[in-house]
Length: 318
Image (cartoon, rainbow, N blue to C red):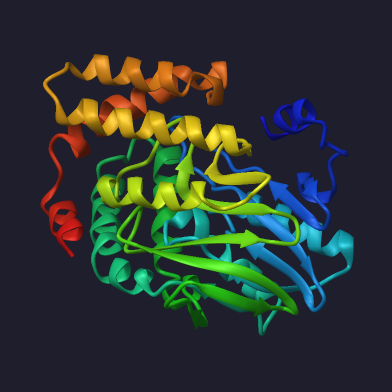
C-alpha cells in the first residue's frame, strides 16, 4: 500500500533494508499491519539525525521491531532516540527490544502511559488471562495472548525516559523537530511530529486507515486535533495505520470523520453510518480493506460512539 501510494505520487525510490521505504531525504517508512484476527503493528518512521537514527513508534510484534533493527544495522548507525506517538501496544511494543539493542537510547513520549498501566492495561491483562484459560483447545490463540501479557509485563521499559509535557520544537539526536501534544484525543496524551526540513508530518493514530480506532478515544476532541493537523504545511502525512497521504487526503479524512460522528449521534441505522464512512473515505481505503473497514466502523458505532463505556465518559470529561 505504501509503495503504490508513493509510486503514484512520483516519489518512490525503492525499498531499503527492513522493508523501509524512503519518502523524503533521510526519512523512511516501515509499514505496519492491521488485519482481522491478529493484533496490529503501527507504522514506524525512521529519521536520520547527526547523532544516529530517530524511530517514531516501534510496533508491537518482534518481527516488526526486527525490521527496524535490520535497517539500523544495514545503515551501520545506532538508534539514538524513539518518539512514541501514544501508549498503545502496537506503537510502543518494540521499545524494549530497541532499548536492549542500543542501551542509553532516549525515549520521548507523553506521560499518558502511566495512567494506562494502572487502568486500561490492567483491565486488558486480566481479560487476556481469562481468555487464555478458556482457550485450552486453541494453542495458537493462547500463544498470541500470552505474548500480549508478556508485553504488558515489560512495564517501565515501554515508557519514556523524557516526558513531552507541551508542544514545542525539540532537538533530538542533533535534529530539531516540532513536537505537538494533544490532550484527551485518541489517548490522554498524543504526540504528533512535524519535520520542517522535509515537510513530513507524523500523525500517529490521530489518522488511521481503513477506519478510526476509538477504544481509548474522546471523539469530539479528536476532531478538534484533526483541525490542527490540517493547518500544518506538510507535503506528506504518515498515519498511525495505513498509507501516507497528501493534504487533500487529510481533508477527505477530516470530512469523513466528522460525518461519522454526526451520523452516530443521529437516529440513522448503524449500516447507514458504515456506508457513509466507506463512501466518504473511499479514495483512502484500499479495496482489499473495505470489508475490514465495515466491521470496524460498525463495531465502534455500536460499542463506543453510541454507547460509550463508563471509562470513556469519564475520560472525555477531563
